[in-house]
Amino acid sequence: MPNWSKLQTRSFLESSARERALGLVDEGTFTELAGPFDRMSSPHLVALGEAVEFDDGVVTGVGRIGKRPVFVISQEGRFIGGAVGEVGGAKMVTTIDLAVAFAEELRAANPKIAADELPLVAISFETGGVRLHESNAGLLAHAEVMDAFQRARGKVPVVALIGSRIGCFGGMGFVAAATDVIVMSEFGRLGLTGPEVIEEEMGKDEFDASNRALVYRTTGGRHKYIMGDCNFLVDDRVAAFRAQVAELCRLPVADFEQFRRIGSAALVEKQMRLVALAAEMQPKDAYDVWRRAGNNDPAGLGDAPVDDFRKQAQRLSV
Amino acid sequence: MALNTLEFDCKAEAASVRLAAPVHYGVVGSGDLEVILEPCDLGGGVKVKVTTPISGFDAVWRKVVETFVNRARLADVAIDINDNNASPAVVSMRLQQALAETAA
Image (cartoon, rainbow over all chains, first blue to last red; front, side, top):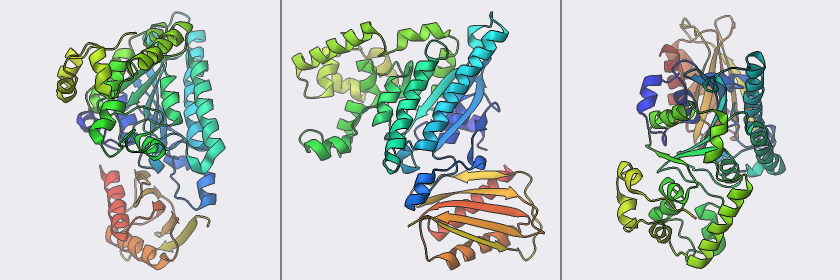
């Protein structure tokens, strides 16, 4: 087991799924569920002669932050790019359902239970989406996770954490968008079609995937923060992500509606205004949008230390 | 084209080191592996299972794992490996790291 205190100072970007899961909750409180010793690997990969992992690339478990039980799901990008298959998807769904069932149990036992004693779900995304080897089973897993979010809505807050190497793309980009609140670091990337796929389909003129600066200012945490696609931008430290989750842990579940980016008629209208703005503006670069949001020196803001960025950045309002 | 499973037993020459608790270490990244070491009553021996997409390297696997078992003087341990094309040097290092985790 990695040392919890040392984990706190570690880069979130460089931490493995298990390290992130362990470091997010209070020291010594993490219990892994369906962990490697249970050997729940993918049967599909075996049939294809592809390497398997004992936990199928997803770490699931439960710990505590203060009094609050925190159900953790953490994806491992080094295993097939964090792609989600049948077993890993089932682990995600079961963890969310466990949190909802536990919340109902706690409320039934004590109707006056404090908000910060009820469960919360934290998902550390690191994935390119569907595991293509498992095709329909992998796609179905995505739909089932979204279904689980709907069952959790208004009962258990679901927090997305994005700051790992692979980012959060493909179908899991949709899934992350359907959570209640998104926390990113500047190294986190969120999107649907990944840069390489856009370049492959539309050509290098449309999107140059080898241009790292372009990739990050289009899909990275800073841009997502200005666009309102992520709610909070934190430092690249396990402790920073943990501190943000701990702060959210103090809120009752009803307060999480304010963080949602999708999921109501008013939010649909807001998204439509955003589409209209894009059609009107025809932006050629993310920085065009930053300027529109009221940032007069987007390049300077992009290069500024993340702490200064947080203080200065104007967020787009539509 | 199915995944290959390699199973064998070995015994350290001066087997005396037993595990207090099971340990898991590593991630099945490209060119990498994960390993589970578990205490298991095997009359002082060591049981090994390797799951890998690669075939034709059975003798190398045996050599690398036996060298590790002998050096660590392991007794009554079941070793379970999920491999994704790791080189022998990486296999050897991950086994040692897994063992170091049990001491931590």
